[in-house]
Amino acid sequence: MLQHFIRLIALLLILCAFAPPAARARDSGASNPRTYLLGPNDRVRVKVYGEPDVTGEYEVDSSGYVSVPLAGRIKASGTTTRQLERAITSALAKGIVRDPRVNVEIAAYRPFYILGEVKKSGEYPYRVGMTVLDAVASAGGFTYRANESKVYLRRAGSTVEEIYPLDAPVLIFPGDNIRIPERFF
Image (cartoon, rainbow, N blue to C red; front, side, top):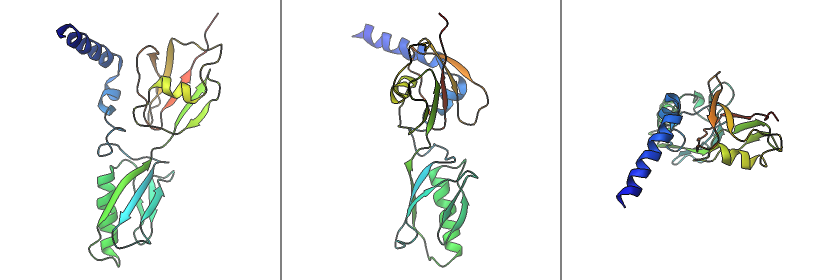
């Protein structure tokens, strides 16, 4: 029993060593909506109690804003759902809504992108806890020319591609770009 526990701890330490510092810091990002930062193409569900005309789903546009009736355009990109709640509450309170009670939750995360040596490259919906291999499976699997030992991953908002081994369970996040390289015979 103790040996299993020690092996588990060793495995966790090894996995942490493969993740770069930025990825380790973001690890809880998409899995925890309270710390996840919204970005373009995310969809949020806004509930304003007593105001059915305002309640609904809204998409963060390419400029990073959501347009909410009676509140106007509100900056959403780079904020958490709690921060967006406060911004919508403040905007509604300045208008005709008295004592607005607002709740914001994530309806759908922005998609991830996969290209290279997969059967169907393109844009795919993100699910919490996805790994690179899950993303490859979503894209129909590897082509016969795929290099199945490594993956190139560019995190959302980054300009740098990082190389990861495919035998490690690498988590992906909304907006990430995944590239499966071709193997050399």
